[in-house]
Length: 204
Image 1 (cartoon, rainbow, N blue to C red):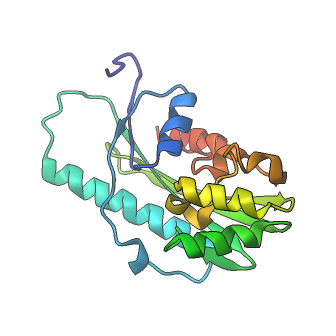
Image 2 (cartoon, rainbow, N blue to C red; image 1 turned 180 degrees about the vertical axis):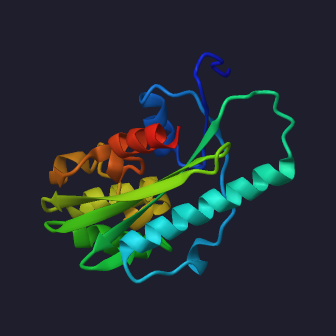
């Protein structure tokens, strides 16, 4: 159900449920498209450069998909494409999704009583004008000691296997062990609201 009163349309270029929820919380109607990119094929030294390059590649992939679909859309409104990427940085090392349960366990044990950061990017493209702009955002997260049985429960449940760094700070099992978040939870979850809002305004 598309809202025709909104002066523009939004495509969220992501299959992330968290990003979908955050954009909906921001009050936007949007459609979804996911990018087909080889994330492992994109390497950068700095996490900030990596998340920007990945979001850029996702945006390019979706733009070319839309071109091949050659959509005969009679809708005159501009379409805003939002692409994003997030990685976890632990002791200076970039962490993507854990390869298996063993790696997820090592990741989470490392956060226990320690600290990690997330670096997230948002790139907004106005498909009508070609305007594109992106920025990144960093959040520091400090943890209390996380008991082994909690770590085992998280791994058994499986959600941590599908997120960067095996890190879900909004998870009910983890929440009690989060000591401090310097930054915003929405950014950790993959879509910083304030930054996204600012970029959408600039793109229109």
